[in-house]
Length: 364
Image 1 (cartoon, rainbow, N blue to C red):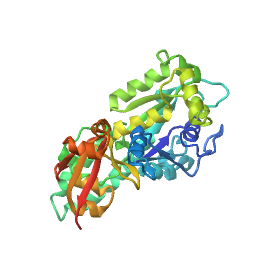
Image 2 (image 1 turned 90 degrees about the vertical axis):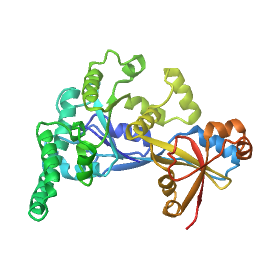
Image 3 (image 1 turned 45 degrees about the vertical axis):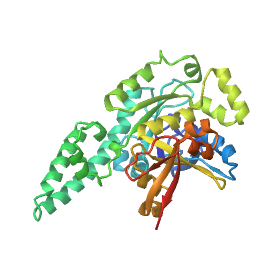
Image 4 (image 1 turned 135 degrees about the vertical axis):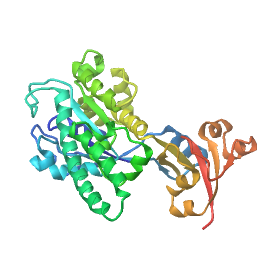
């Protein structure tokens, strides 16, 4: 999974990125500090892996991985190349979801590119640039479809959908807020649009606001109103607190979070929100060589889940031996789980569930 961190300059993007990835990306109080995207790999916390490691006496543990990409601050005119905008927009096309960092705190010592803190305006600025970039893509696709229409009338259906999306974008609304039928989606499935990508608005609040509660933060409320209209998620976070957490070891981190009255770090909450937003789950494989988490879409059937490990597993799929993680732990071992009839033999139509512990049978 690849998540792109975007936002206006000086909203705390790189500070947050540094904190959650410990990658040491440059962070400074001026625009365009980030030119090439910084990339950080983060392991997905999953306590189940440690439990299975002990059960199987495994030599290696391999958690799921999330790739965070810190994309440079966008400004007005980015879609036309302002502030190296075209280059930055191309980086956004490569991500699965967008973490849109929105500044929701005031600080006279940190300049705002627009001169004041106003989340609604900031979000509209970013969205408009993405919309303009998408309009350019739609126009080019329409030109192609119109040419193809002369030889094949079926392209009229594609043109109709593209025209619908174009009108929606021209009304300055993101494509993800447009309701399309499954057939319409199928017609334009290979059209890569920035504004169809799911979004988590990371509202960057002050340390005091985050600890004392954000109920009275008018900036966060403004973001929540926008998010509710477009079906996006809102995740209040303090980049400053995350920076402090990043400097601590695991024991110190737990003590610090407890002192602040926080159950989990912003990174952990961000990962959970990302999985929820993208409809992802993890299944597990376990044995003496290794214990591993595999990330799949919720609703994935057994052969396709097997294909995450290797294409041969999907092509030669016979069956999957499956036991729910909780059942396995309660039984105490795979042998005991089998004796109790908790291990099931599932075929090609089986839909995987989060926490399934699996052994695939295949023949190539």
